[in-house]
Length: 84
Image 1 (cartoon, rainbow, N blue to C red):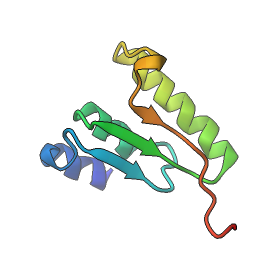
Image 2: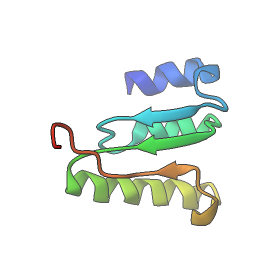
Image 3: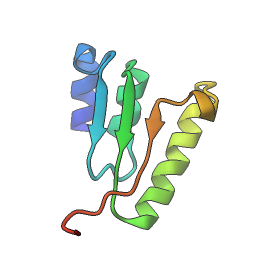
Image 4: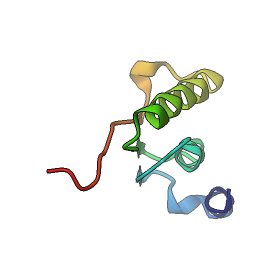
């Protein structure tokens, strides 16, 4: 919540920039960045259950904003740290 408020107060930090969120969890900050006109947003998490929820949140965000999935600038791959 603190980071999201910071981004809202400073939108030029993400506007028209590529955003990477490591360990995104629910993806709240990344969705805020997308709402602030980030060029693209890459939300990652290693936990399969977190990814399921994250992808659901992205889908709801896109539906609310009238964004078709093929037009999306948000992606949510799994990223597992410490594995070769």
